[in-house]
Image (cartoon, rainbow over all chains, first blue to last red):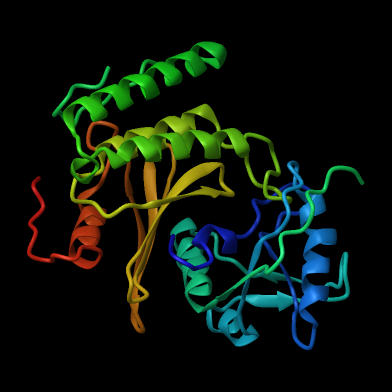
Length: 122
Length: 173
C-alpha cells in the first residue's frame, strides 16, 4: 500500500444547518511531544468515531500549505487548545477535491509506533 | 446481469432489503464472471478483491458521521456505483485504492511512485476528479457518469498517460 495520507482525509465536512460552513478539523502539533499528539487523537478523534477504532496514523503539514490553497486556519481552540478548523473552502466540488489533493501531497505520514488497546467504554 | 466481455453493466433496481439482496447477487455474479473469464489475477482477477473491499467499506461506513464529524453514510446506491466502476476498469488499469469519502461515496485513488496522484469521487450523475502530476501541473473537473460507459475518456486518458508503466499502451475506445 502507498504510504501516503489519502486525499479523502483532507476533505471538509458537509454543511449542516448548525454548521453551514465547510471545515476541516485539525490540531496543531508544533512543540507537542509525540505521546501527547496520540493522546489528543485518542481523546478527541477516536471517541467521536462510531466504531471507536484507534487512530493509527496522522498526516502533518505546514500552515503555509493551507494558505497557499487560499484556505484559512481558524484556531477556535474547541474542544482542545490546539484545535483549529480549516475553512474558506470553495463551493465547487472539483476545486475542493483539488485542494484536498494538494494538502495530501504536501502532508507527511506519521504511523503510530504502538497500537493502543481497543477502546470499548467511555 | 453482467454480460461477459461487454462494457454494458446493469443492476436490478429496488429498494431496501430487495436492493441489498440484489447487490449481493450482483457481487456473487460479478465475482463468478470475473474469476471464470479473467484468470489469472494479472488478467483481471484482481477486481474480485476490489469488490470485497468496496463491500467492507460500505459496511463500515453506513452510519452518519462515520468519520467522527458530518460524513454522509455510504448508501447501497453509492456501493452500486463503485461496483459498476470497478467492473468497468480496463484490465490494464493500475490497482486503485478505494477510500470512503465524506460525501457518502467510495472514491478511487491512484498513486504513482513519483508523487503523481489521481483522485476520483463518484456522484449520482458525475465523476469528480483531481490529478496532481507535479509542481505547476495539476487539473480538476467533473465529467458525466454514465452506467453504460462508466469511465469517462478524460479520466481514462489521464490514467493511461500518467499512471501506467508502459506509456505506449493505447486505450481502446
